[in-house]
Image 1 (spheres, rainbow, N blue to C red):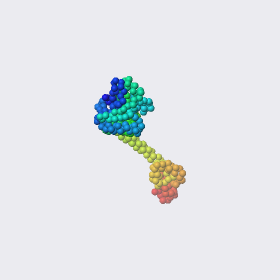
Image 2 (spheres, helix red, strand yellow):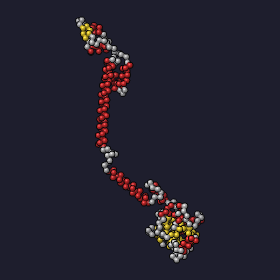
Image 3 (cartoon, rainbow, N blue to C red):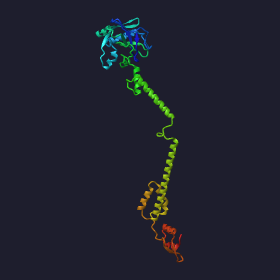
Length: 337
């Protein structure tokens, strides 16, 4: 007897058919337990053969179908793809013999002829078992085959009757997390994991290496550049302020000379000009403001002193006389300040 495994809740075993060309009516499908050992030494439990019979009877009575015998597991491999899966026979009755499960087969003509002609040498029943306990609970189909060592990976494609393959579901979630399709192989998954680990190691190695200068700036260079920028900005601000002071002084003096403001308001207008937009507002004010301190017309003129001598008004005397509204006669009468 030979065994072959599939990494799901189904596994294909093998039983050799008679070599004399006779067609058996009863065939053994599950050997006696409690352990059923595979070729790779993995084991399953056949400690409840009555449960297996109950499963097969329920398949007949509730699902309304006999256990199919086919060619090369076509029921498991081709039928789910919409391809033909002709039967070689049907399991019609089942019994327990010394702990083993046997089936009475109603062979089709093609199936009987193939066995009689020795075209096929092995029967390969597909077991249904619990993943957690590896306990055999039923049979899915039986195939005529000449490859008893075939691992039926493709049996994954059909869920077992009345059960859910939680491990397969978890595997699909893992494949999705890895960015792979549902039909990706274990090798594809391992390659994806190795790539992720490699990328992670590369990132860790890069973390300890000197960063590329085309993407990163050393902190010392950065701080020096910021300081230079700040200094340049301050120099521009100082230059602009100096120019503003000059412009304000020129505008104030021009307004004083034009008599648009008085010396007493010079400080006020100077402060107002230092505000944002103040100088422009002051110039507009001066342009439209009336003369509040007209020229006294005394500049450069001579006035007589008390002795009858003419005295020229100096600039300071002239400015003071203009502020207080003194005339030449006042200066002549009361004297210069």
